[in-house]
Image (cartoon, rainbow, N blue to C red; front, side, top):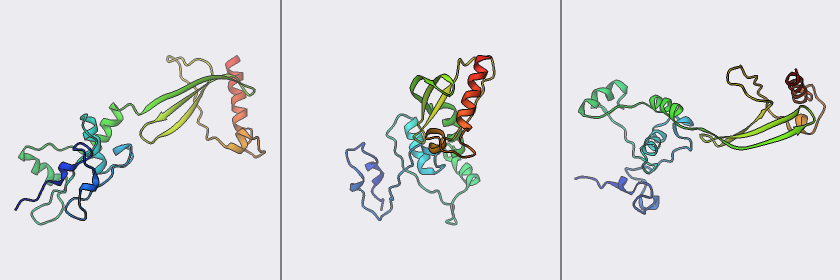
Length: 186
């Protein structure tokens, strides 16, 4: 007897949600992590990423291919099985493709301001769409693509950098800003 095909309820495409799938059963709904294989290199995330890249509903159905002895098929087994007209792709390939093709960083804001520590700066905010974090970049002067650009990473310390708490690190940010201003004048 053939089992019903519950994967036809997948996502919201048919106007039905997860409440229409009875569990436990032969189908266990999984939830992919936001950011896909760039956040978690799993089969669930890969299925959703492939659907999204194909312009389809970002959902998928995954299954385990078993060998004759009941153990899980590995890559060599899957390549042999693919001779039945299937294509084999790896999560590693999907990660490489997404890193090359996806636009993962987006500038969200820009403002110019005067700082008592270093003159005129431009602050730019960037959103990492894979993980949902924002990063602020402070730019001093003009960036010339034909010359190396001085870059300094700084982890903000609220108490030292903003409130001026005295510590061995307290003049770190202010001092570097002043040195960049002096370099800019030179």
